[in-house]
Amino acid sequence: RALAPRTADQLPGYAELVQAMYAGVQSTDYFQILGVDRGATQAEIRAAFEDASRRFDPHQVGRDSPLWVQVKEIAAVVEDAYRLLSNERLRTRYELAIR
Image (cartoon, rainbow, N blue to C red; front, side, top):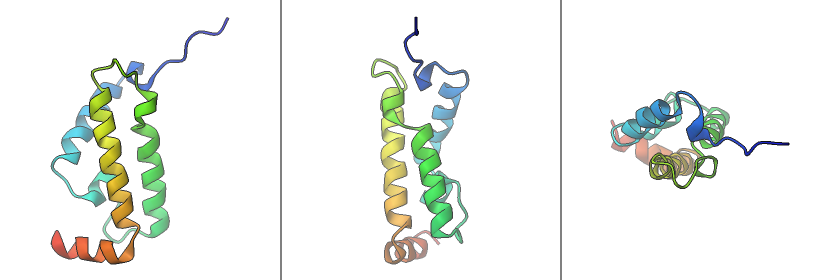
């Protein structure tokens, strides 16, 4: 018989990963959140977004987990970062603002 699938919050080290990223989304810029340089191409930004979206998908964490709220907030910030950085006009304005 198949066992119930494990959620991400049950994986070793996931809590530490979430804590580090959660601290990061509160104190760093969108480039650092996605883990790309300021000169990153659109392809690099998209790949970083897809990777972060997989790692911090709230659907992969049990709703009863103490990590769920943090993962949900991280996912929202990751989406905001991608939305802004994938738009050249918004990205240019953002880069000027964070100098």
